[in-house]
Image 1 (cartoon, rainbow, N blue to C red):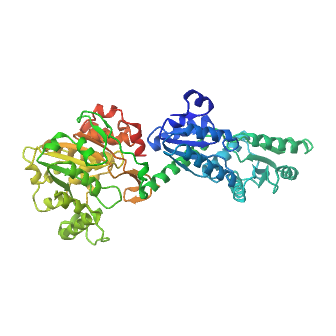
Image 2 (image 1 turned 120 degrees about the horizontal axis):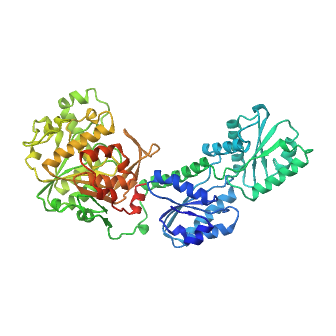
Length: 591
């Protein structure tokens, strides 16, 4: 984690070049940069570099330092102006800085936003600064007057923002009066306003529209002292509040802006293909050597996927693959690009496994009950299945690659399922053994790959086995909690692991899911964003290793997860997967 200021810059050199992603605070100080970096660590899933340039809006030297620090850099830079009065001059300065950065660093993507003076967290920070400035004892509401002191040198829009902030603070504090005074604009000019308001029987609180103390604060203090001396010695009628420069709420407001800018950029990438001139194809990176612990690698095409797959799969005459086809939700299922890469990567015959599910229904609500009447309506359900495969383009890939698709629900309805001979049913879920298709039992010993997509830390190759339960509506198997679901999936892993050479593979060839309640896409599990083509996959013998690595890449510590506590007790968590050093850049791809 890095927080840049002049001392840190002298010690480390041009720190802005140290990481491919950086948030640049145009203003602020070293303390704020470090605090924002800490606040961003968990939601982003990696240590963010946050660099502060104090005095950026007032000194050209700060802008020159920023450009020099980024010269020749690559990656992404997110500029966050902190000056609340963001008028035409400030907007022009940010635009010019962004242009200079792009000229100095052609491989650097620059993004920026504008501060919101009416941000609710900023209002709270200023209100708390008022309370602290009054030592917790505000004047009585009927005697409390509020003056928001702003520069006023910008355009009409920025002055209107000052009035909006004043009104929000006025309401938040319950003041009797609210006024605005400008240091560099005549209507109303600060000196005149203080002289006029000082004659009124109110206790005035003067709040500078600043997040840090600078020469504007000194100018305000000088004007206010002149007004006090002119008021026949009544110094107590005005109380000047210090800016909330090191307030925890200000940290969270800044971190929230950084997250919103980051996510906005990510959402744009979903619908806009990256410029080919910015794409650099290089040799795939691979970490880990032991399939029992788990391996992670860059996987962007069939050749790189083939290099990740175990030799047992590459040498097998027939390989069974449990895909993820639960519905139409964008980016959440094994799409044609990922399926095509997999089928090209595996030399032998591939049998795809999946079951019917109610979420592939496109014909609207049905009049019958999915749980009790699904089999009686199997012709309709089968038609929905075929439409799903055709609409998504999966059917075309299956035909072209000459793969076989085995629907476990159809096998169950046709009476071609049962407990394999010699299997030991799980005493907690004995019924699961009755769901194994006979054709699978006849091929015991073959490789079985649970081929899942990056979809959060728990919905990976282990959860993917849940689709081997043939019921189209599997609600009762979800149980009351995620730990119950984990036990069901672990039971399936032990069952199929006793019959097959079981492997877990988690891929992000064409995309990955990042759950976010404010996300662009909506599903029955909540809102989410799609991260376009991170190009990373994990694999392991068994299931646990691949899922542990995938969870870590998405910012989850499996040691602190109730879901993985169950996995550890039932299947074990490979120590190698828990401790394997993963490239930090990979985690950023999923943020």
